[in-house]
Length: 258
Image: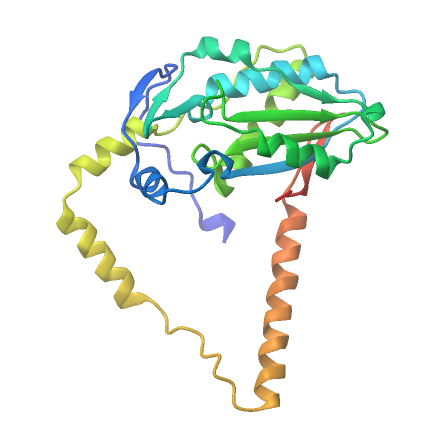
């Protein structure tokens, strides 16, 4: 199959400037604020990473600041249900929090404290905590309005790339930016409601029938249980393959604290 695949060059270029100023809420963001959650600022995601002892906190902080500068969405701020990009200078407010071994706190306890302290009035909705120890760990937490399950992988790839560059004494650089929220909003505005309805009907017409779980006997129950078990094994194998490694600095998904 690989021999039949070809590389498709992007046909559209996007602005590489550092965005600042107001941006319209996306439909998903509008939905989020309409839910009137009790603590909307606590709706976040996190990853816990293993890092090498040779990786200094100074190097980590430098790489994370560059990550914040490159990925504009990490600098989003929400106030009175309005969104805006903060200027690039806001990265000066970012600092890597360090949890010493002597604190006596468990990783889970410190992680819960970090998440509970999230607030929309904070300058950044992105936090990082470095845990000292024989196997140092790095906890990254970001509000779900700024990241999702797909963007985490991009962020970790870029973080590994930045650490590689620092380790090799090379200038810090990352892949070109793709579409921004501004581009997405322009696309939505230029797309007619009829086009959305057409696409919706297409997926309705091509959707498969839902799985029938109205089981009538023990054999069917056991058989379905085996299927679910197989799917879980498959998912586990995929998760194990999602690891990141760079010379001297091993970074990979360790677990997702909730």
